Image 1 (cartoon, rainbow, N blue to C red):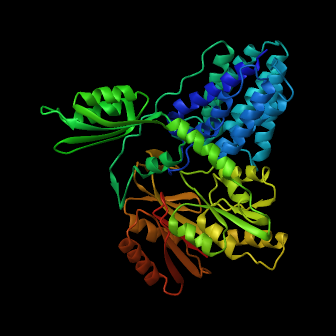
Image 2 (image 1 turned 120 degrees about the horizontal axis):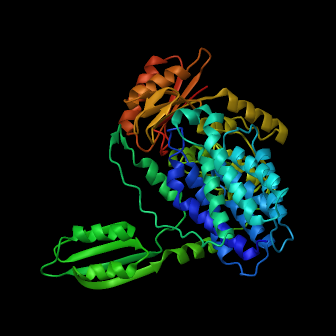
Image 3 (image 1 turned 90 degrees about the vertical axis):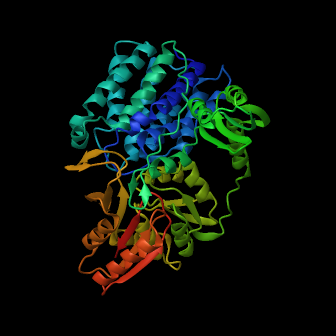
Amino acid sequence: MINGNMLRRAFISGAHSITNKKKSVDELNVFPVPDGDTGSNMSMTINNSVAELENLEENVPCSTVASTAASCLLRGARGNSGVILSLIFRGFSKGLAGKAEMSAEDLVNSLELGVQGAYKSVMKPTEGTILTVAREAAEKARESLRSTNDVRAIMSDICRQARETLDKTPTLLPALAKAGVVDAGGMGLVIIFEAMRDVFDGGEIVEQEAQANAPVTTEAVGAVTVDTFSSVVGQYDTVIHFTYCTEMLITKKPDCDDPIKLRAYLETIGDCVVVVDDDEIIKVHVHTNNPGKAIEKGLEFGYINFPKVENMKLQHEKEQKKAKSAFVPAEQVNDFGFVAVAAGSGIESLFKDVGVDCVVKGGQTMNPSTQDILEAIMSCPAKTVFVLPNNKNIIMAAEQAVKLADRRVCVLQTRTIPQGMSAMLAFDPEADFNTNRIEMTAAIERVSTGQITFAARDSDYEGKDIKQGEILAMDNGKLSFVEKDLAKAAFKLTKKLVKGDSSYITIIYGADVTDDDAEALHKQISAKFSNLDVNLINGGQPVYYYIISVE
């Protein structure tokens, strides 16, 4: 039998383990487009439960541990992989309801319930993914239960089967085979399960490793550098790897060594390092788990003034609690309300202008959690709320919020910003819910979307040898071609999108495109399609140089 404390420790260990290995999981993603990568999404999803699990009493029953974890994962779910992971763990909540301890049969039932829930949540389940890994692991668990009641032995069989299934995912998905990798979501699940198994077997909780910042690459691509992806993802990774924000002023000694050496040392014990010096003073800032070492090293360069050390984890927890306690759902005074997910000040303003009540900051590389979307829904003063995810990797998280809201919610299947805009423009305030749902959905299908971005990694995808930093042209979500020149790629893609019955072209340019370059493209496209209405908008979005819609 597994008691509650052991299950609690196993969940925490699984969270730490996927966090430590998220980069290697991210690198398994076949598609080279920068996105909210699998390892990062799974890590942030399960880590949403760690603080509450750590606060549980040691004699807590399994039912409380499982329900706590399930609730936190559901609300913290990000991206499709995060949602599926949360549903698998919801199975444990259902299977262990009312249970003080977990038997072998409870483990098998819980995993089966989780797999059933995960499959039901996906409209068209694809085999060769995390779903297959979870399902075959559950099937093996049921088979093992016929010969043993040892929960540890069954957990071992689950991990062994999950690993075997993971290894064969390339035979089920040709794209994986071509890229020479296994499924990223499946790998993430194996990592979590194996960490849990080790705790069940008497091992210690995996310690969360300090995550140094990814190296910044400054290889220019048009008007942007390829470090954009890492910087954007970092803004949404809420896992604090270095606890103490440490600052100090150093009055330099007469024979002071080169401050560059101080910076080099601090980068070995932390991140967010800033070392600024002038003739007399060195100003230091670092996030580290060893503030004493930072100060001790600083003393080698001179005298310390005004040292300051703050615990960022405690600050973060206080802010989260304050935000939760301060949130009050809006009264349902209007018939309809709208939530849109978007990134970029210009795009956010566009959605506000067409009637969106609340914009959730997010999109590609920045998948908001179910909780983020839920709070936006609840802040709408409406009885019925339409949600526009505007990204295929956000739809599932939005759909999970439906179950938690206190009002009717309709998630429209918008996969791009132009689809979301078209849906909003099709809304008729005089029509009823069903009429609007039908008309807004129809409007989504009438718009074609082109997106110009960059390759986040080297890849051999769909017969194309892609190098990191090259320009990628996306035609309605599918890779169309690879280019080296940004303006040429945008013009070429627009020509592909325009059809005989097209009337409008809208060019939304991003934060990494200059006004002059955007104006030049607008002039070129207007000259080519002089019979069409061509609009240029400064969207200010990250990741995508251009988002082009044709209707």
